[in-house]
Image (cartoon, rainbow, N blue to C red):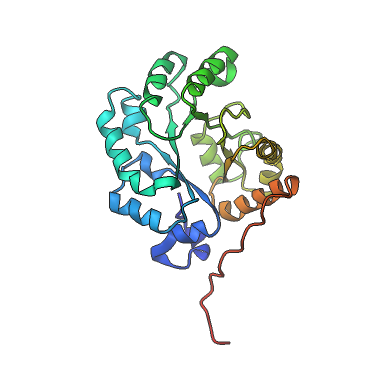
Length: 269
């Protein structure tokens, strides 16, 4: 996701929305690929608008993960992998988001599927057993560790800690999973999805544990990617940079972020 009406001030060139986004953040969740595999020409334009070290975390098509549930989806997966090939090193991870009904009894299918994937994979599960049953969690961790895959936590604890105060929060609570927070990294490249509230102060206060954990991972030599969500995502770009600054306050050797180019048109005066 790199287009949002509220972000237009950060993206002054209409035909270069991704480039404008990349001036503010250096990673993106590719959520649209879940609904439809893009044209290869479209993916080529994504590569042209981003630097080689930009990180795409692309969600696999729902035909693979939700409709076929990772079995017998070779054709759909092959078509998707061919299309995203132009991203090259920018393809940071293939995001395997699984339905809430995909539980411990399905781990065999997951393990077999992950062995067929090229490159790095990161799995997001939503079945409550993986969060409430330590044995199920350990089984999943072993399946992922066997192929060097990561477990993506989607932390919605702040979103659900009190009743909604707006229509956007109500909609978010009706759609997002309510699961326990999980903070264990399995690989060198942990990925976190954090969801806050409308209120900026509550969002920032809620991510403080993640700032501590991210700093710890960096000191361990890991290279984490953290995505910041709010109910309407309108302020996610500046909030992501604020999260980086919070982590940098804990790890001063991190380089300072470069300031994006001003969005106002150039003038002579």
